[in-house]
Length: 476
Ligand SMILES: [Zn+2]
Image (cartoon, rainbow, N blue to C red):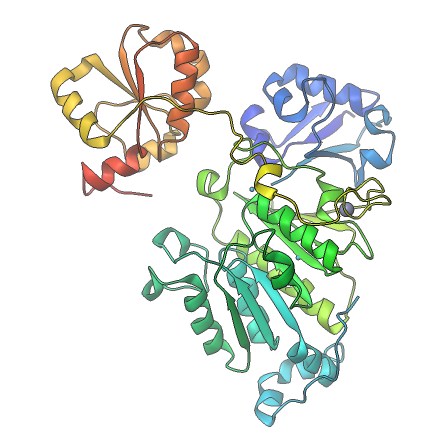
């Protein structure tokens, strides 16, 4: 029986969609070599230039991190499962004298009060608790709704965004009537309708190294519903420095992760992922998509862990990483251990204050894909003048093409472009386009690098075209 390697969703484009691959080998290293020989495209995602494993990729043999075993020299046996876990773009709080409940509250929380694990004492702890949720989006919606319904006394929300139509497929705290409204206002109205006893504290700001300690410091528990690495590391570090639990959740396409990071008792996010992936390597939900119900499941797990923490019931996710695969409907659990070398919660920490997280995550230092652009209006004019002499290449994916495409464009998805350069005339005048103008700029750089001299990228992508030229074309 061979070894099974489990491939996460973001890497399946390099394995022809396969989620597991059966391979032979005597050690983790040998299995990995075999995998990279048969699927060479995975190499740059898993290994650094010097051949070592990238630090934002974790490998688990069955349920144990190979760093806790003998790393790549760990022997494997037939039937073992090797899981690749890449980073994917939240004790009981000390409470004073808990407030009492009114008769109306007793009735409202009756189904809680009937549970001995909650009871009157637990419900009063919930009423006294102060929980901060970072973000009122996909994860923030279900978790704030359940926290409010459960009677958490004070819910702080950090957000500065407004509700737009693409949010409503999953951000269930907002409704159609809220379009264009601040998410904070919309969430407050909905949560107060769910439970008028709950106090909503609105923080209309982007969380930064300058304000994080002050904002997080006012709460007992922090629930991380962010969608970007810079904020995730910021929330982690601030929680470690303040000694607060961080209820973590993240989602991508059909997969989710959840854990509770609490450095006083277990690992933190940096123990799991020492550093973030370089910008652009892991697509965001805005680029890669996400199934609408998925944040409902992961956000509910975060709400559950928060409530358990407050009432002190059950076993928390401290020291465990929960992985959820929605398509297979399968939960898996991996043991996490504190990394003694962790730069913030390890034995000799090197981080003692908050840092510049945008720089840490490489934001602003991305390879500059600058190049000549063409506006939608100019493209329309030139297409009319030049006809087929102007080659328009759509580098989006086929399922995006099916939603809408520009008449006369040719579909060559960005991932296929390197192999399909031969189909293009090196002297032709080319315009690349995608959804918003980011991928088309990468395509432009690729074409320039291959010697194509006359290439421009459509500024704003097909979205700008649909907005200003072909009004009536569906936007997404
Ligand atoms: Zn740590």
